[in-house]
Image (cartoon, rainbow, N blue to C red; front, side, top):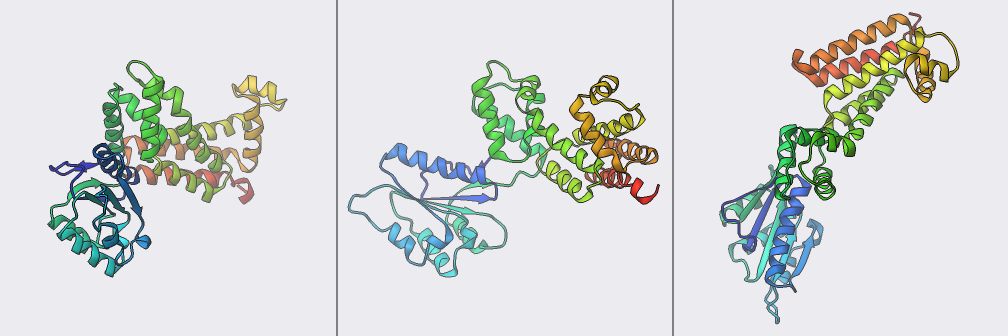
Length: 330
């Protein structure tokens, strides 16, 4: 959630939104525009990219109007403005026009820091919009979204939603809104499971499928994407375990029709066909090696190691190699 300065007047002459979280930056803009249009329904809004704000453009946009109309001027990626345009903006910050609100969106960091410092020195209202890279931050965001909507959700439900959706705040916010609209009463983990858990499971099983097929690079890519989108590591180790065990079960089963094997092994017939394709490069020794790798990864993600991501990567590589063991003459 965006953090604001003590002066929370949305119609302050200058609002500075700092960070790289697109949803929060957009919300900062929307808040100013909504406040301006509440004061004047005919407010003119100009939303500009750096290449649209040339030297002299700001002066034109903020010059007095015959109709004295209220105006909101939004400048996105202000850190990318040209040196001459930055001079114009700094000059404007010293003497902002009445009935005009300037909103500067700045990524933060070193680039364009002079403009950032200048805006702060003139007392601009500031909203922090940091990128939410930590699962705990995304969890806090989800809880805040439910509170804003006046809805009650259990901690387990909030965590399940983060696990299923991942790191995209827009999707998380949309999911909260949908649940709040569709579900009456307290939103619990079971409700989230019905709506969204399948997404995380699908992502986890993609990692497992690529690994047991011996496609190392694709498995690692799927793994990194899953982790980046917030899929819980335990879901991935579970999918890896199921994938390897399915190979072992089918390898030790008697031949027969998929329907007969499905009944014997407790798998749907379509999965029998898929596992048959996946097991072509496997040997009994390879299955044993892969199962040990899964066990080690499971321990690693449940607190037995310092780096769960490394534990998963190591397991994926080991499983993918084991999937090609027959081709290496083992």
